[in-house]
Structure formats: structure tokens, C-alpha cells
Length: 379
Image (tube, rainbow, N blue to C red; front, top):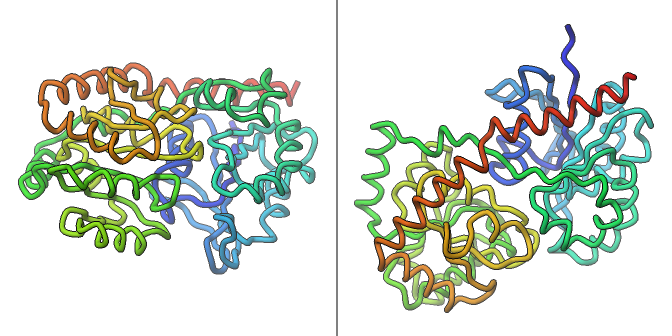
């Protein structure tokens, strides 16, 4: 019996980028592959198009891009390719924000079920948001279902409010069996890391403005700790210069991109996860769940998004106001200087991760939506 085809559309996917929305798409494809055939359409950052299959058997097509503008690929053929592929798909998942997806919606077959997965608003580029707002509105109107990760997103995203009846809140899930357990080799790697960096504060994410890594650097001034920052992005040089200007270059390590095994070792070696994001572009923070599963205490920010609802102030995290280096530093110092507090936050985080953010539970809810929409189409 033919498995229904789910077409996911976004701007980038593994192996070009890990974490964030690509990580969610990967989780969806892997967790649903028993019952659904998943395909992914993306636009390359630069270069000719190509098709490939990931190590987990996910079929990916990347159309040609001529670079990026406002963090969006310049890929003029993408909307037309998406429209063409959608005609053969049983269901399309538009991962937002991505304006080229919005542009393609009017070319869709009216009978093709559409899920708009609203991961975050367009927060970093006000002019872009204004320009694409009409297309975003049309996409939201066309969508059969809109998935969000937290109620706070509906409260803060004005464009979503007229479509509230179509919105379904489904928190992200991840492979907790991986993050919550260490075998002997992984534990040994973590121990060696901690021996080299006994007071490690870990930060993970794209080196982009909304992540707030410049705030983290400022917070280190009065803190007896090293910051290890994992990730790639356009701000690498400026963050390195900023660390040097602050006299902190010897206490800040930019690790670049790590594989999952290396990242896991860092989670188990660190003393705290710093999550200093500063805008609503940070809608959830899946890395918080991974850190919680590993029993790592968190310092996050009080954004009007899911971020402080995932790891909650005084329970799994210490939450501070965004853009406040002194408050961030004090919170990190409190965890570094109080082992009982660190253990309590870490243990609570592990419990919450395992009970609220499992991959099987997440997959089950998503697959139920898939089936419902596909059945409606065929009846």
C-alpha cells in the first residue's frame, strides 16, 4: 500500500544547517517515516541545485540560489518548484517564516491540504516583514491547520490572531533517549572536557543578532568562568573582536559546528547553559529541551515567547530580562556558586523534558493531523 507523501518546504536543511527549524523537520521526517513518505524542498545558500538523500533516508531537493538577502535565499525558481511538487504531494507543510513559501501558495492546487507550521515571526527585518505581510496573510488564510509550539506565540503574533480557530498548540519533541543517557565513551568524553574547562558556561546557536551572544560576552566581565559558544554564523568575526575588546578572548572559545555526539559531551561537561536571546525571533529554543534532558541548569530570558515557558524561572531555570548583561551574569554566578541550586534545577529540567517533550508523543500528535487532513481530501 502506498504511503502518503508529505512535502516539507523551508529555506535550508541538514547537512547545511543543524538545529532550529531544520532539526524540527528532521525529527518529523524520521519519526513519521513508518507511515508517511517525506520529502524536503529547500533553497541552497549559493550554487546550483541538487538532490540528495540524508543518512537517515530523507529525500531532499535543493533548488539553485544566488545568495541571500535578509536571511532569505535569492532563489527565483523556488515558488514554482514548490507549486509543481505540491501537485503530487498528499499534504504540504509550509515551515514559516520563509517568504518564498508564502509566494508559492497561490499556485497550489486548491485540493492539496496545507499545514502552515509557524515556528517564529519575522522579527529581525521589519522592512521584510512589512513587504511580505500580504503574502503571509494569504498563506495563513489558505492553510487548513496552523501549528504553533506554545500559546504565547498566538498571543504575540498579531497576524495569527484572525486565524486562531485553525491554530493547534503542539510543543516540540526531540530524541530524549539520546540526550538523557550517556554510555561509558560519552561519559569519558564529557569528563575530559570538564577537566579542561572546569567552569564552562555553554551557549549554542547560530551566530546571529537575536541570539544575544554579545550580551553573554558582556556578562562574563565579573564572572569566574569560561564561555564555550557552539555554532556558526555571520557574527563570528564581530563577536571575536568584541571578546578581544572586553579583554575576554582567553575566556571565550568559539567551537564552530559540532556533531551531535560532540554537542552531547559539552552538555554533560558544562556547568550551565546560557540562553540569552533578545528578540521574538527566538520562539522556543529546542536546545533548552536537550540541555534539560542532560540535567543541565539553564539561564534564559523573559521573552514573550515559549522560551521562559519551556525552562521556567525558579524551577528548571533562572530567567532574566533580555539585554541585561549584569542580570545574566548574576544568574550564571548563582548557579556556578551553588551546587545544590544547580542540581535542583538540573533534576527538575530532566523530569520536565522527559514528561513534556518526548519525540513519540510529538510524532503521534503530528501524524494525527496528517491523517485527518488527508482523509478529508479523499472523502
